[in-house]
Length: 74
Image (cartoon, rainbow, N blue to C red; front, top):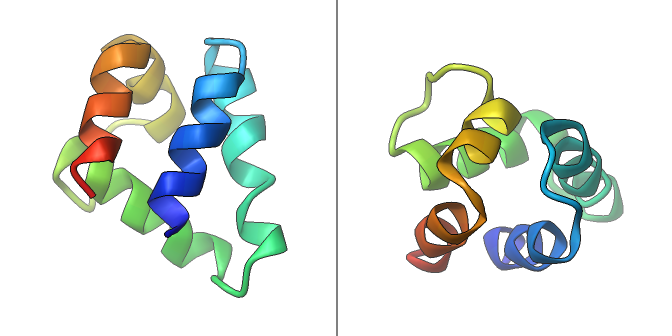
């Protein structure tokens, strides 16, 4: 459920690393998922790993379509 919310927020945001971060960080606060766990799940969905280069920059560099495709698998 969280990953789908992220996909919607990211789809609607401007495609810059700061805008992606703002859109994503706005979501965990409205849910009962601790931010750390939410971002770990997002990192795993986007990169397939629990450790990676900076998440929001990675999403930006992957591009909107590839990022959304990866999020769509969850």
